[in-house]
Structures are given as structure tokens and as C-alpha cells.
Image 1 (cartoon, one colour):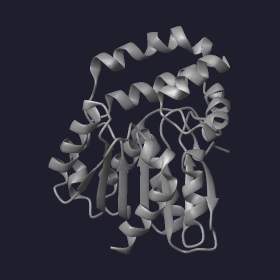
Image 2 (image 1 turned 90 degrees about the vertical axis):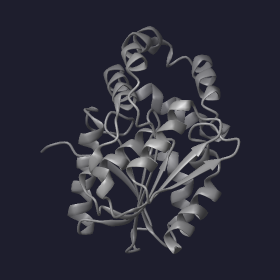
Image 3 (image 1 turned 135 degrees about the vertical axis):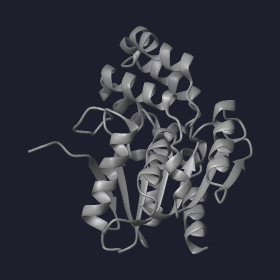
Image 4 (image 1 turned 135 degrees about the horizontal axis):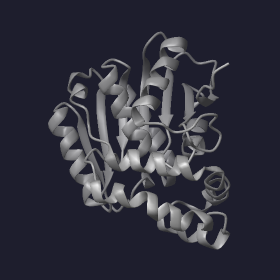
Length: 251
């Protein structure tokens, strides 16, 4: 039997499906609090992206992850769902899904998505991970890395446990894929109501990527979040994120 993508589910008794795709190096717990807040109304599915803690299969590409989740939606939800959200690597998978299947969802929220290939950064990933991978299990080093990500302290144990479980080959693969990803022209035909969120303290690549997405999908809504770093919205402002999902859907 072949290995398949793993999923955590909340509110399975509900008919309308919401899928939330975690960031690179994290896992399903990226959206655990949002799922708990939304489960009374929606069937919330949290996939574990390939190559991450809790996954049964190695990471190959953003395109493959997108195709796997589309196949899951085809099998369980008749080809489309109500809402898909994603952070960083998860946002790239979401954008790829919209390019591969124009009507995969009605509403979409891409947070902190990079869609401009960074050739130099990508080339440096393998040697950088080769030098630092041995330190990942060191709690002091992990705490420094964690603090640099601006994630609230409540997530440290999840982060530390799951980072230690990621294989070096997978970490290299998904980081190279993320820094090499370019938005596909096919996304211009999406019927989804697309929302693109970036923090004002994001890198220039993320902010410029929002412009690229807007130019390719003119109907998308771009929102800048004052004072927020990469991924802080879904990770640190879970109540506001869940309420934003509700508001987007209610429109």
C-alpha cells in the first residue's frame, strides 16, 4: 500500500470544509488554535505537508503537494471546498493548487507567500543546512532559532519536537523548493476569491511577491498587517485569524 499525506481533522460532523496549510518547518499545530475556534461551524482539515513531522512521505515538490491535496479534495469533497488558507510554504502550495485547479475552493487566504525565485538564497541552502543541522537537537540553539521566528512561546515545545523529527534531506528539499517557487500563469484563471496577507515587517521579497500575485490575479485583495513579521498573523493572532476566515466566507 502506498504512503499517503496525513491529515488532522476537527468538526467532522460539519459539511462545509476549511483546509489550512502550515508553514515550512512547522506542522499541523500551526493552525491548531484556529481549528479549535472554527470547528463548531466548519469541517477543518489540517494536512501535514510531505517531509514534515508526522508525514509518511519525503518532500518532493510544491507541485506534488498541491496535486496530493487536490486528489484528497476530489476523493472526499467532490472536487472543491469552501476555503483554503496557507502560510509561507503552505501559501505556495495553496497558490499552486489554484493554478492547477481554478475552482478548487471558493475562498482562499495566502499569508506571507514568496513567488519570486531567489537563486542565490536557494543555492546557499544545502551548505547552510549541512553546517547547522547537527545543532537542531540542541535546545539552546533551537530557542534562538525559535525566537528569531517571532512565534509565541506557547508553541516552542511543538516546534522543538517537530524540528528534531525533520530529516536533513527533507529540510533541504522544501527550503530549496520554497526559495525557488515562481507563480504559475495558470492562477490567472482562478474563480476563487483570493486574499493575500503580508506583515509590514516582512522581507522585501514577500511584499514584492504580493504585487506579483496582484498583477497576475487582479481581482485578489491584498492586505498589509501593521507591525507583523513573517507568519505572525496565523501563529500569534489566532483569534483574529479565525474571525478573518469567518468574515471572508460571510462576504
